[in-house]
Amino acid sequence: MAMENDSLPIPKVPEASGGILGFIRGNVVRYPLVAVLPSLVFLMTLFYVNLCLSLLALPLVVVVLFWLFKINTLWHQIAVGAVALLIASFLLTAVNTAMVSESPLNTYSDDQVLTDGIVTPYRGTLTTQYVFTITVTSDASVVNTYVVVSGLYVDKPLNLSMNLVSHSADNHTRNYSATTTVESSVNNFYFATSTDGEWHNTYVIDGPVSSDSVALFGALAWTMLIQIFGYCFMQLVIMILFLRMSGKSKDTRKKMMEDYMKKKEQMKPSKAGAEDSTGGSTTGTEETFICSECGSEVRASAKFCPNCGEPFDEDEEETDDAGPEKKQ
Image (tube, helix red, strand yellow):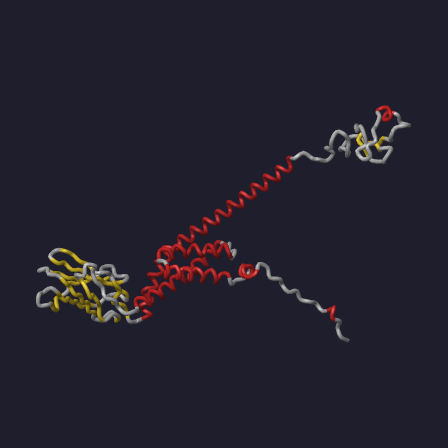
């Protein structure tokens, strides 16, 4: 025997509330979104503005997303915020690795006394012999030229005196060179020269760097991690605590206002039986009688019936036979 259709249970389809935002707030997907979206904003700010503003924007965006997606648990906020900073550190490391892996640039001084400063090869290992060269253009009789190489995680930079390798016939242009190994996977350098006691410096540029991309990424990752967490993590914690304290203060003020309104309502006099003295509804203990015209219940002190307007005579009230019936 076939089962009737009306006996089958019909499953209820949950109704979506709040659209996409409501769905995100009620789903675990909000946590990876808060971890990833701030990093994207961080990179956009880094490319189109500068690093300082991007470091300020990163924790601010994290806190705004906490509020938008209703992530209110303190430990969830700190944990998700830390993951967001880790992702930002990873992306910043990838960007810096790509930048330092590009072709080397020449460096120079603003006054053009020092030009064509470069290192060859640009990428190598810790045992590679790197050659630094610079051209000095000056009529000075005494010229002392140096190259200063600073390595990542190396306390003391290398300060090398350079050797004159060639010069023009009039000694106006001189070419200097220095050869050395480096102690770090990531380095930068600049040149300095003294011409008759006057110093000239070039811009600092990257190089030499490791030819091992993994080692290069690892060396930069730790630096980026320290930079991101040093600038952003404490700001993030302060923002979270400030907003939580502000929220609690708001809730406290709201509760105080509700308590005040309740007390105010309790202090209001009861309106039961507090009608106009011309007649009306009965009070709690006052005697009443029945109007002989309409049958309404009227207070004993009323001068006329509030329902039909029938006037009452005092003599009639005192006469039991002619007057209205009284009741307690």
